[in-house]
Length: 241
Image: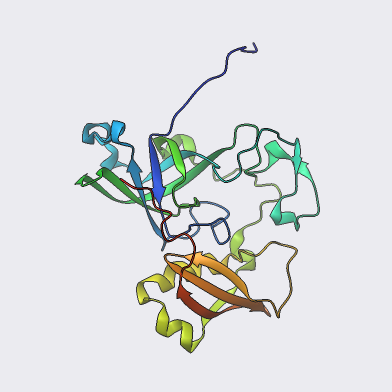
């Protein structure tokens, strides 16, 4: 039965991660295990008892808002990047951010739970596919017997391992980038963050990652990080506590 009234929900947390902008963010969760993000709760929900028992789980579901894609309208069809951006599919057959309610769902791995920080309880996770500062509406444990479906079909969403890019770094970029950032950046670039219809081998693409502006080119199945400089955007993106 249709409901006449609207529901109102508010964020309980936000995420702190290396991606201040959409370009470069993994297109699905669970792919970039070397990238660590922190779930920081809003003051109202900074109660350690709310996480009691979570240490017995390895993964959690995050329900969040596509905050950079919110609009007053929606389309019943979208152009998935997996299909080159040229073929339309029904919005409910995709994970496009352009949805009626702009909600995202991600499964991430718990790396650490610190109950007593200056920001209250903080959950550190790997495999997130969110932009820095993304509002989170709920956190739920991943339960293997009900959530895991090995026999499930994935439609046009092919295994990302099939088209991974090989990633290399120029000497200059290797000198500038902190060594601890290399594994996560490598995993992000392996997935080829470019729009599917871009194939210009002479183009220098720019993405922001963990405080650096990174420039890379792609040719013959290889992404080469040509440059890295301290970021000029997104430096102050993190929410003030």
